[in-house]
Length: 246
Image 1 (cartoon, rainbow, N blue to C red):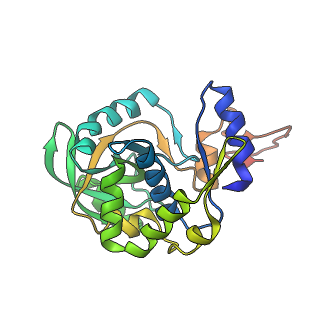
Image 2: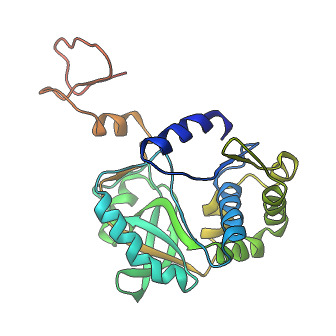
């Protein structure tokens, strides 16, 4: 959103990339945000394929994730809305899960169902049953995503499309029209599309993924001393183990 616009430009410059940066004028969750990106991409190329990734996730093994994206590309081109299901490392209760269905091609599976964050016992059952963590990252043809979204909430897709067509460009940013975008329903892409569509597909992947959604996750990803203590900045640990200091 607007608060991070210059940080994004700095990070793009740091990796030598240029991009159109769309600015959300209001918080409407991931549904309208992803739809806006799809609508913008479709203006540039009617056949565009969109890879929608969360900016605040960690992927430890980028090569494995890139391979999963390549695995899912053909399915996306064929009209599937592809998500990436992480092979679970433990019975996590902080993630939603995906039950894979029939094989589409290669490693790509249809999605049998999405399930909400479980309790510990249910999470263990899910792992034994071959469920995957729901990473919340997606690949799709822009036109397919918008058509499916429109089937379930035409008014919001119309609002987002108007926000894109009425957008103004300024200093490398694309400012979505505030009035139009603000009239879209605030909803996640999971609730808006993924849990309703018959086009959902999943690619299993093991890539050291984390959504960094808790302090425990931050600790897990941090460098630690011999007693398991992690710190950002100067810190002195006395008779302490497995602590995280920020």
